[in-house]
Image (cartoon, rainbow, N blue to C red):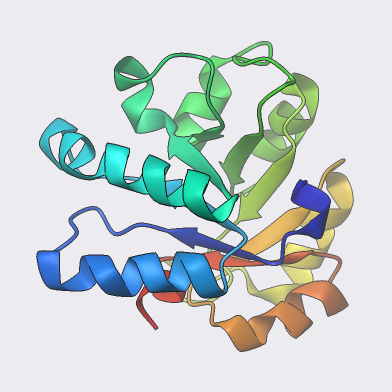
Length: 180
């Protein structure tokens, strides 16, 4: 399934009521996968079931960010942040589910490969949230190290899919993809 993905959306940490419909529309119309990443347990509980229902109704996949591991069973698609990625020595979920990870360097890419990740988000490509971007050439290098599809993250727009593919990736990911 992940081999057919080009656009991965990430929910904002806090979803305002007025933004929920926009995120829902983006997921239904153009996103291939949605990663749920909320600020806290309250936000998770407020939105989790709604997104699960939406995903089932449109036959699309959702992954849960690892910051919410204590709130879900291990029978769910999981996206590991880089900190959690480095804690695991083996795949934390069954191969029946999708496992992704956020990576920023060679060490994290190698760890993701070791535990059998199905996809990677490599970031930040562009300067984003005060972090310097790694640029497309470094993205290409890290993508080539990976054994699975890589997606560019950090200041990405839908139009950047072409840049990602030109540089060895499969697509792009970001919060902006659910808002635009």
